[in-house]
Length: 193
Image (cartoon, rainbow, N blue to C red; front, side, top):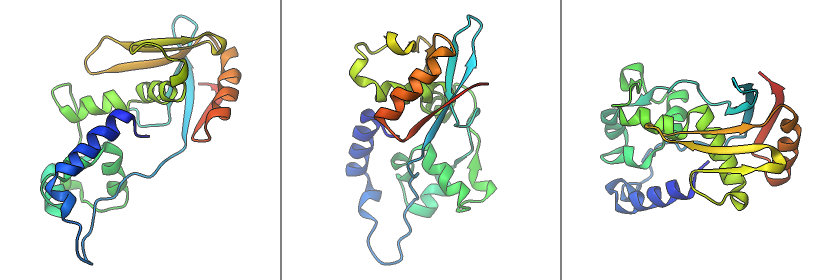
């Protein structure tokens, strides 16, 4: 899923990147872009009896392709055009060897912070629902949708951490029904883990 912020940034980078003009000729191999994917949201109880929503994404950062390996394969500046799921798709397709990969870790690693801010399962669930219910979200730091028992919150932390919580398991069926009327790209698993 691409947000408006990511779209604007990616478009600007593509327009100003030297790689944007290298895709000429019959034998040019371009980086793979991640494909749209149906996301499943799960829930688990919190200490206060509510439910925390999270996606089926990886619980820890997956390996990424080293910049030098990307530049060797596609040219200088390629890493500016890619999001982490693009890396994962090329790795899954076997385009790069283990020595071309690294594992992001620690808050000093920008790639780790990007994973936390966008792909951490709890944050990803928040962002998917925030985008889906944008018509009911008034502020930038949080929202409450009472008829669904849904609360979306941006926590004051670095790296970014955002959550989507429900008031209880009784909210799962309501959320699932509402989500199904808005999109077929998000599925709510009604079982509490």
